[in-house]
Length: 204
Figure 1 (tube, rainbow, N blue to C red):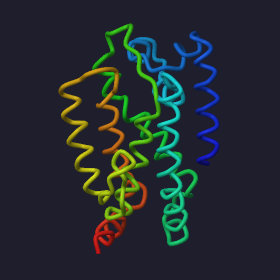
Figure 2: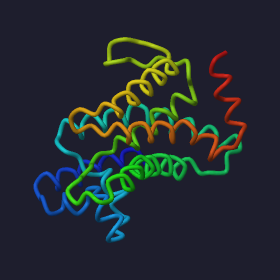
Figure 3: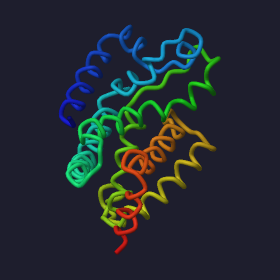
């Protein structure tokens, strides 16, 4: 499942780098979603990226955390969670992509030229599900500084919240925030309140 998502994202993004019309059709344009009911854009934008750096960083993080989350879902499926792990993982990732941009669909609905692309909402969701499942595992900030995942999560939320209120550049911090929150509550939404025991046991 993870490899399929990565291959599909790389192929679609590469095609969009070469074809501006395809880029424009698949990217998130809230005006077209709201006024022309092109709801597919809420998902398709996650398979389009602005450049190779944007694509590579997102797919590297997705692969790094996705493997752990998928394996955890497989273990939980054996122990009683009703969602098949592949379907559950796809719901996490695609759901994160969609949920992350719903705020922009409403807020930017009357801005014809506003465009957003990238899988950051889905990637944030996967990262924060991994935090929920193993809160005391090490995450390396800037790939150098180790810290407990739950501390990273708090710092990430604080930074993205501040950045959303003080926007600079083209990074969609609202999408990062929404994807992170979705990912953190996702295990409970799909696995029930017993998932809270997994979270709490992660501190022991």
